[in-house]
Image (cartoon, rainbow, N blue to C red; front, side, top):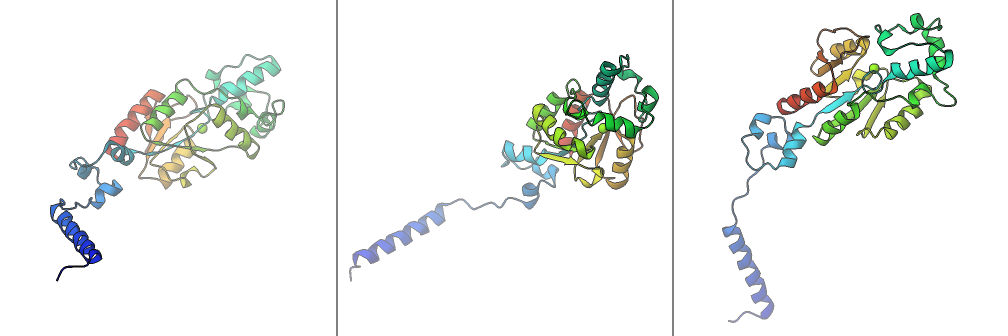
Length: 244
Ligand SMILES: [Mg+2]
């Protein structure tokens, strides 16, 4: 008995589906390790990965301090101080973390911070220069797929100027943390110049890579890696990114 027209169409579609199923290559499931990037060794043996996925797996969250690392805090306050008081202080005099009262007329840091909070309506942190190569290095790392996470400590009155400064200097970050408890910000790598912060990272984040930006005002901290300049940090992160 001949099929009616609609029944013939249904039968045709059924045959087509069956042919497609028979001809299709078996589906491969992507191993879970590849999708999460937990097992980099496995990834290198997998030929189906494209460059983009590989790059994402190598990306690190880099916790970057600002003052003394990206921003030249000492040059900033010394320039202003010399201009106001006619002195000839230079940055190389800063050889210790708490040296400011001994170099200036300020009796304690409280006085210094009050002074630094008002430079003609802005704060000290509004117009700091970046260290040579710092912004370029951050861009290099960001373009390599790493996440630049700013982790900085500031007085409360400096918070708006800190955001303005980051924007004006075009730092490649989507994430800024202004906190005294830096170790609470989850990162794969930390770069800082303050001995107290470095010790706190070692204590609270023992399984992370903690980098001391070597400066005249800090000293070696056990459990940290010494970084002498921004080129060295980029190189260190390139190695870390491929072995993470
Ligand atoms: Mg610092």
